[in-house]
Length: 446
Image (tube, rainbow, N blue to C red):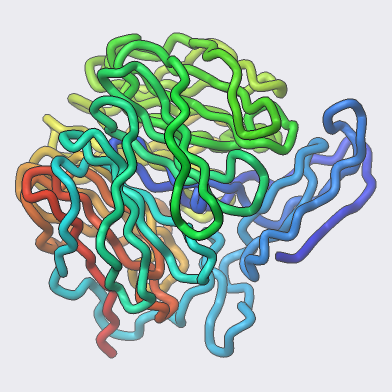
């Protein structure tokens, strides 16, 4: 929430620090902001107008201008929050102190939703300060919204029509009214549906925009530097990513497609090279790799550079895993039953993948600090084993063996937020076959 506005020329900025979630590629707008501590510049915005930082009311972000673009960057890990005894986790969240003993999750509590939940995201939809949940229900052809009660439980699901076979949902304020709206990828309608929030956690009818063939993942961030969030959509059968630029009023221009790898299934938007412009990373299932597309500064992208991962790469997430201030990548490999970690070399290029064992058929990965040591850990959803593997970070971007936590049947995706207001990140898991959401609350045993 600290605002920096410093007139400088030729300014360079420390690179990103922060975490993303991926669940069939869903990328929540609450977790895909960049790194902390950047110096700010004025000018360079649309039409040469000075950039003015926007206070996002988050005690753990620095609101800055980078290259003429207003951004909210996570504060440095360990920075004090406004609440006594808490601190910033380096991902943009205010968290409790480190767990001195063992940490993990409570036994999952199930919330019933519509048929085939396959993607999930969190945001405060009704403005009460409590995290709510949106879930893409692929068999129900709708998106469900569950308002949080602040204690890890939720009000009953309310459904909204959203394309055909919705498979990915992102929360993002598309029209600049300060209320998170929804964007949903429809795999068989070949559209992305946008539902505008009325400010009370209810949503207007969907407006559909054509994408490439078989869109399977949607991410949202300001890609062209005009201060308005744009959309990036991974097209599974199109082997491409579609970019839809915001017109400034929450409506979107025609999709522009950029080639990615074969079976483009998951996309995230992050500043990977530290230039203040969000780049794209796409997990390619049939290609067994992740494609990185660098932003040219105006919402257009350079040709993809591919990095091998493992067999049937299906989701990608980004976080600073080794503490160097640069966002790294984590990719789940379904047939390999592992997660690949690719460390950023500081310029948006990546080291060879290091793989860590998970459960059977991993389908989603979330970066979150489970034990409060300010090093992002990995929670991997295992659809073949009906559980979640939690791999603790050793502090240098390498990981220990996973611990297992039960979920529902055929879990497909997960998202993280502090669901019970204890300052620790929790997990919510979408279970495709049981049509439930599993709520796993973080525990700390001294």
